[in-house]
Length: 444
Image 1 (tube, rainbow, N blue to C red):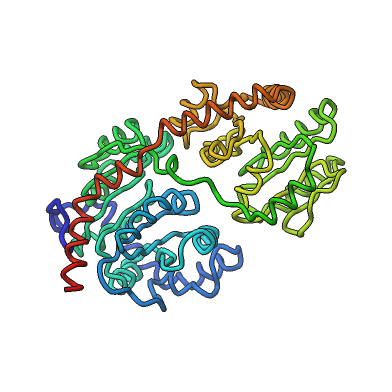
Image 2 (spheres, rainbow, N blue to C red; image 1 turned 30 degrees about the vertical axis):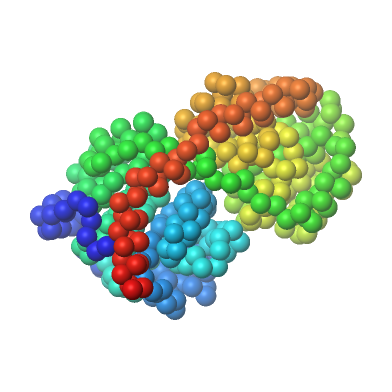
């Protein structure tokens, strides 16, 4: 399928000055790419064995037949596509999955079948993007949420590649910024045949910014299966913590760990043997978090050092990648990080699916609709500050029946909000039908 369902005008007919300038600047910046790559390598933000992919080069071979290209910024977006990828593979379609972070590449290697091809998305230079598209020649492009790189989109459009935004999200922070540059975002969104948004609010924002054929299909993250856990590792952790009250603080950010450490100190006076597991959003912050615990005088163990929590461990710093499924199964109470600071909150859905009672701070705009539904039904509890966090966690520790009720309500909400995968597939059906026709013709 080489042409989209909507006829696009030639790029030169609509490109605003901002994008013309961006394209010229990104051409001019190519000589600086080696310095950028060296800097990112030093920071651990690039894979030294795969940096060529950032320049649009690949050692991989394009598979025969239709190829569906799915792009997401990082871990959350990639995992949101897991169910969709499974269904597309069931149609015998080959998948090219791109992302921009080392952590997402690690997750893909752990969680996805080996026939899903992962590539780092090229830097957004016309030269690098052209290499990437010329090599892979995708048949359909699905962009997850709102990771919209101008040259990537414009170059794909110039090749008449059908493009769809899936699980589209336009945050309260991004929307007013894009409103001030409406001509620019409209020129980019106008290249997509369809925009499938997470919510009616997101749909309204995308439409206001110039997207066409906008449909609210729901949040794909609600349909993703609960994360796995190594049964041997889980049994070891269960054996080391059996009989102890446990709280997991998941995906925490700077400024939250200090509050959680002090919260643990105060709760431990009422709940002997309490163990708090802190899982920093970025595992490379593990040493910094451990330093905070050490400075507080509390006893800790650190997972990246292959330590297990001992009987006298107060706080377990779980600074490894891809093990949240393990810790969600360990505790009945989960504090979702990124919500006491103005980050916007992390995804609570996986924890809910594994039976946790959720506590969160006030800053949850990244998943506003989900948290609103959870709070309204009693499927989560909001804590506006340190004292409120102490109160909410203390109540759930003291009252197992209340904890179970919160978890059960949360599970019902997530189940009711599901269905985005089927709606997404229904919207994509015309494209998938064309791919199946092409596949049949190729095999004839």
